[in-house]
Image 1: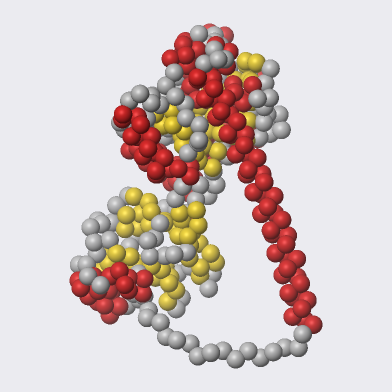
Image 2 (image 1 turned 180 degrees about the vertical axis):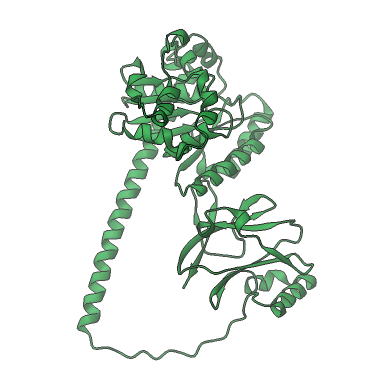
Length: 420
């Protein structure tokens, strides 16, 4: 089952509209779909004409029941909306969930455990998250295989999106979870200049992580919600229905691409194993040949002592940094320690977060050396391969002086270091 969390800590960006209509469109495409409402406002039930007074039990009761040793199955509280669509409704009780679960172990995995019991019964689960970063959102992210961030093309869109992606990055890195994150432009009004400019900025900064589909501003979508219907039922000929049908098709196609990618990776791994075995057999069959190594050329060390720092500061003062910066900055192994060195003249704090400290930057603080903005720290790490990022004045970023990187699920890059 593919689990998609609809997340944005900013309200008014159309999360519930996206949740309801994406779930309905996936069901319309023949996929068995579950819509899970994790917002205490319970707008999914309102938007699908489920009478609030008839909801005897909600997702809250299912999540809390395990901590009381009286487990309730999710199937007991589901409402059937259509042949392929079912709803797990919310209730105002969800607002007390964080307080009720205080001190409970693995409280952030309650929803993940509940949905795991339904694996195989549904093709998709769509989770409508509240407009806040708390335990309810944590539960959705822990359960999710994918995250969609709907962004209205309004004035504060770019700022809010950057904050949201940073939050997602921190949460997923904290739990070592790989999630596919994509941005969806919603409530787009092509008639306004500001919307067009913001759309251009979104495409520039997040092109690789944006859906091709755009949900345009459409009054029919609001009318459909007020009548308690998804747009596919209220007005199948509307532009809103076309947009969400296109989004559902794109979501399904992305899953197919991921499956093909996994198959290719699996085949590549098998071929690599076969090739490695063949190499071992060839090596065993041939007589040993003694290799003669060419003399090593000494390379300048990166910063590892005070004299190196002084050389780096002189380079900075003389303006000759661009040509030789990589000789002195980055990360390298010196004896039994990994030495991190970077240059941020205006920074007030520089920290390192990575696999080695559970992605908690406060555990690895870099210290400023001299007055030119050089920062340095040392770590003793067991042999292995590690991912890390720098946190400069609270902003997460890759190490600009380390060429070894790999992409992360949030459209950015993690830096890589190897300890021998």
